[in-house]
Length: 161
Image (cartoon, rainbow, N blue to C red):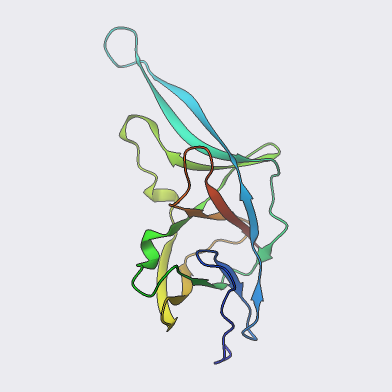
């Protein structure tokens, strides 16, 4: 990895950190927020309905494809911001010609199994290298911003080769 790393122009936008230290853009999009009802037939009085909330994207694959050893970089709004509080990385679920990123599962089910563990390495004040652990080849992923409003979550998507 090159020692002189470029710094992204915009804050809170993860970018691919190439081996030569240059930057590459991820697929940046605002997906459509949706909910799916679920049914629990074991619940009293005819079952319990809950919702799974997710963001849907209109293609099954990202045009951005990276290796499973990819690193990323992000410039935060200020040097005191914790990078873990700005976004998280999660696997996308592929359905026919769409990708779905789940933001809430019904009836207390956890999303943690789809999250990717991230390590952060400080490059400069407010600038961090992001090192994902355990990316799987042939999988679609998304960095989900925690700062979006209802229905307007910005997601930075990529696939692995």
